[in-house]
Image (cartoon, rainbow, N blue to C red):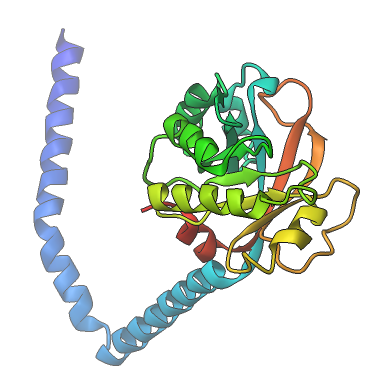
Length: 261
């Protein structure tokens, strides 16, 4: 007990000493500032300001500099996905999820995958697999019923892989789809297409983003692409089997501008 009392007394003595020093701190600092030449403080302040300005300019330049971001697109074919593992891999910076197909099919995994990807702060977009045997208006209605409008979403994408050149009213039907989807989400859709369809559509939709499907190796040869699917057999943590791997090309600023408001 005597040792305990002595220890407590020593602790109190130390606490009081610390408190006394803290009370003296303002005076110590005031004396320090008084002794240091004013010119030295001005010079130090200028140096700090220069560093801060340099860091700020560098950060701003990064927003405008062209870069690439890795992403994936998935559907029910990928089965159960561990979005936590996808996020922790640090490889996936965005994801597109299949939402619908034709005039009636809706992907059963879309809502869950969207919720989980958002939970782990991965930018999400939805895509529609376009059918040339259904009207554009009916397909747009199906997509809209499957995809609630949300802030921070990537623009809707239209996956067109069928042989559309032989369809006399293809462009008319597609225009109906584009018009309805743009009105609903306030975003121009992205055309997710192989080079042949790109060549058919680019003149009519040159102000839109194109997502080129080309898994043959090497970058796409078409001029106006924003996204590129470069593999359909990629490997990503949290996903069993192969997955479509994609790449965004552009600045971080332009990427963020695509997100819904």
